[in-house]
Image (cartoon, rainbow, N blue to C red; front, side, top):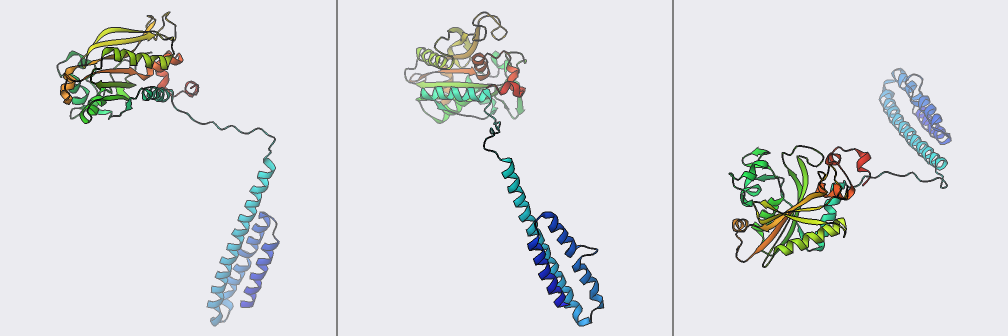
Length: 339
C-alpha cells in the first residue's frame, strides 16, 4: 500500500505539471481529493481490509499525502489566477486611450476663507491662537466686561451645558486666555466656530465661524486699527472696496465701531444680503476697554490696544456672490464643487 501511495504522489505531481488552466487543476483536484471517487478516498476506504499492523501507518501516510496534494493544487490555482490577471491587464491597457480622471475632494469654501484670512494676518505679523468651543461664562462674559446684569448679555446667554459652561458666542474668549498667559506686545487672531440663538435666514445661522483679532502694546491708537483693517479689506476684496466706520457699542471696547463694506453682490444697488442698503456689516471693532485690561492684570495706563471680530461666512458670501448662508451647510456638492 505504501508503494501505491508513492505512485499516487508522483502521478499527482506529473498531472499538475501538465495542467494548463484553472479548469484542469479543478479536474485534478476532483480526481485525487474528490469525496466520492477520489483516489485518496479510495485508499482510505480500503484501510479496514488491510492487516492490523498496516492500518495505522497507511492511514497516516494517506492523510499526509492528501494535505500535500491539496497544497500543490492551491499553489497551482494561485499561479493560474495571477497569470489570468496579468493577461487581462495586458489586453485592457492601451496607452493610446485617454486616462481616467479621478475626482478628488477639496477644502470647504469656509475653510478656504479662514486659511486666506490667516495668511493675510500672518503677513502683518499676527499670531494664530485657538481656544475651546465649550467655554466658561467667565471668559465668555465676565472677563469681557459683560456682567450678569448687562443688557447685551441677554442676546447670547443661551446655550448652557451646566456648571456655568456654555457654547461660546464669540472667539473673544481666546483673547482673554492669551492675555492671561502673555505680556504685551500681542498681535493675534483667533478663528473658530461660535454659537448664537439667531433665527436662520439668508444672512444668519445659529452656528457660524468668526475670527477675532487683538493688538496690545504701548501707544496703539484707533488709527492703527483703521490702518490694519483697511489693509485686510483691500487684500481680501481688492483695492476698489469701499469701507465705512459707524459709531457703535461693545462692552469690551471703547470707543467702538461697526465697519461696513460695499456689497459686492449687488454693487451697492440693494439685495437680500445687504438688506437693500448697498452696504454689508462685516466687522465690529474698537479700542480695548480699560476694564478688560484690569481683569487680565495689564496696566491700563501703560498699554492700549484694539480688538475686532469678523464673520467668515459673511466675507465668503460677499467675495463669491453667494446670497444665502444656508448653502454652506446643506452639503450640496453641486454648490460646494464650485470652489
